[in-house]
Length: 217
Image 1 (cartoon, helix red, strand yellow):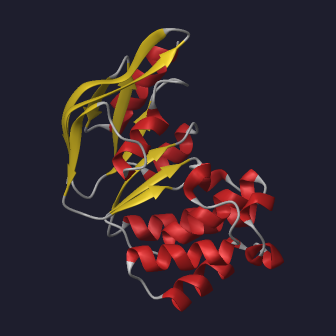
Image 2 (tube, rainbow, N blue to C red):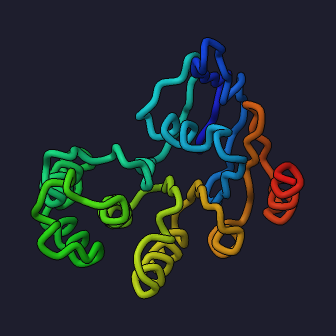
């Protein structure tokens, strides 16, 4: 369960405060894979980071009774001066999972070769995404926060990413940001539409996509 109570977040832009989340009150259903839709700049990544606890709201709160991943596509997830392996060890300790097992899983999954033992600051954005996605998939969460990363890498890596994400979704929920409606349809069963600081839940994914596309038009 994830519940938003009077959640508000804004930023100052050119001397004017822009609300990206405006007094949100909503309870998300358990076990659903939810597409988070909205135009560029609507605040989707900000909402994901607030759910993960990496950004604080201006007011209100988020209540949850399950485990939630960090935002998988968020570039600030890992410390740039530590190696990929050192970051994974740190995450294993934080989440209380077996360090050796997680290291082995991520090293095999992310396919970074010798870069796994080099500082993350040397990684390309795609390499960072592969590392964060691998680390997230290596831990069993009740809800995964995923931002575009199933599109990272070559065709074989994308197939592998989609396969393991689909496997995790058999027992977990997710909130997914992705600009590909084909991938949204592949992974999600309901939708959230963020516009003007308001979030609307749609049980019917196709209705959410249709409203999103109408808004963009």
